[in-house]
Length: 188
Image (cartoon, rainbow, N blue to C red; front, side, top):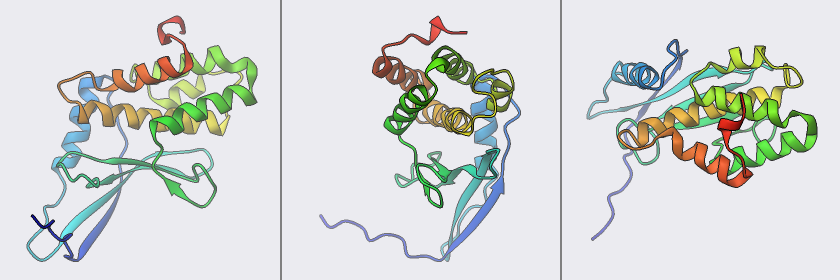
C-alpha cells in the first residue's frame, strides 16, 4: 500500500508567548491542554502551526514548544531550545542530551552535584525553574543550569501528556536516575 503524500496546504504559522501559572502535575496538564484547545482549527485550504515561547533564559534565548509534532497525534508537541547545543541554532533536546548536559555541568562545577540534583527534583515536583534558580547557591545565575531546568520542565510536561494514563514524568526521572546511578529522593 502506498504511503500518503505529506499535506502541501499553505501553513499559517502562529507564534505565542505562553507562561504557566499552576504548580501541580494535574493542573499543569490542564493548563497546557486549555491552551491547545484555544488553537484555531485549520481548514481545507490551510493548516495552522504553533510555536509557543514557554521559557525565556537569562541570555534572551527561548525554550519553545512546537505544534503539531511530527507524529501529529493531536496533543503532541516538541520541545526546542535556542542556542542549544550550539549558539545560533535551535534543537530538540533529547533525554540523552539532558543526561549529557547534567554530566557536563557536574564535570565543569564538581561541587554542585547535590545542588543540581536537588534542583532537578524540585522541577520534577512542579516548582517553576526561575524559583528553583533563585534558591540556588553555586549554580545561581549559571546559564547552563537554568537552561537544563527549563528544558526539563517541558520534557516532564511532554511526558505527562504523551503518557497521560501511565507514569508520565516518572519515565524521564527514572532514566536520569538510572543513567547517573542516583535517587532524586536523596536530594532536597
